[in-house]
Length: 236
Image (cartoon, rainbow, N blue to C red; front, side, top):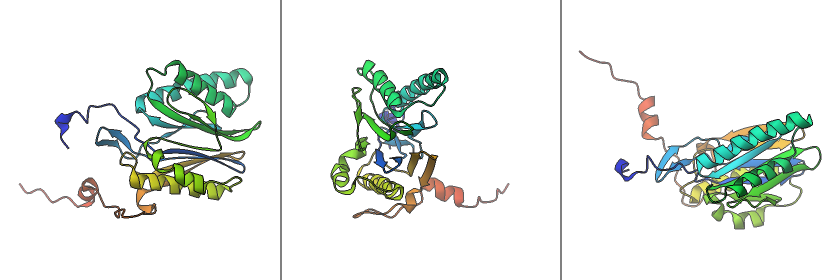
C-alpha cells in the first residue's frame, strides 16, 4: 500500500453489508465489521449495530462519521422522548427521527441506515432509511456495498413466519456470502436479535463462517504471526 496515496488520511467508509429481517416474534439485525479508508482497512472488527434505546437498534452504512452522528442525535432525542412519555419509544418513532435527520440533511449526509426493534404495540418491525431520507417499512431489507450481491438470494431464501433460529441462520449466511464477493465487506459477523424477552447479541468469528465458491481458507495475518512468536533474548 502506498501511504502517500492518501488512503490512510481519507474519509472512513463503512463499506459494509447490513441486514434486517423480521421473524415470527421479533427481528434480527446483522452486519459485517470492516471499516475502510480507501483501499486500506482502518478497522477490521468495528461494531456497525448501534443501540438507540433498550428495544431499538440501528445498522449503519456509508460514511462512518455521518452514521455515528445521526445515531448519537437520535439516541439523545429518544432518551428525552422516553422521559416525557414515561415508557419506551416505539420502533416507528425511532425510524421517523432517523428519517427526519437524514432528509433534512440529505445534501450533506452519505449514510444509509436500517432501524429495527420490538415494541408492545406493533411487535417486531424493520425500517430502511436509504440515502436521501426515505423511510420504508419492510419485512426484510439489506444495505451497504455488499447488498448488491444479495437481492436474488433474499428473494429465494426469505419466507414469512420464520422461526428465530431460521432468521439468525439466514442473516449469518447472507453476510458471509457478501463478504465472499464484496471487497469492502469483511471481518466478523455480528447479529442482534430483539423480541419481547429482550436483546441478544451474537458474534461469529471470520474463521467460523462458511466458505463459498473459490473462496480461500482464512490465513493468519503478519501481525498475528509476529505476536504469537516468542521474542528472541536480547544480547548485549
